[in-house]
Amino acid sequence: MVLFALLYHSICILFCYLPRLKTLLLYVAILLSVGALAQGQGQVRVKGTVYDSTHIYPVEAVSVMSTGGRGTMTDSLGRYQLDVQEKDSIWFSFLGKPTVKYPVLKIPDATQFDIALTLKVSVMKEVRIRSRYYKEDSVQ
Image (cartoon, rainbow, N blue to C red):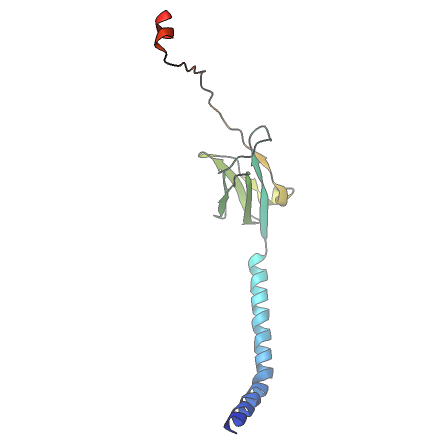
């Protein structure tokens, strides 16, 4: 009998406060959705691939930075993805050498912003390796 009274009392309390609880949950849901919309307003996701000057080979470990302070690096396939504000600019940096800044508003397709970097590659002189064979060395 006590269990029945406790259950009845709990159900009465639940039905009594249910309309207020619904209203409170509705207000919380509205506030959360408005906050999410305000935070995401003006945000752009810039994605693409960084290639070398031939536009064939992707370059990994390139820093991608924005004027808003966000940054990322390219993966092993040269791909990057960065969330920035519309008013920001982005630039790329490889081995400490930055590129020019690209305003996000002037990027034609932010979902496919591929870029090619001019990389200076030092070419070493040819090196010949010979075996150390005493008789060959003596003949020469």
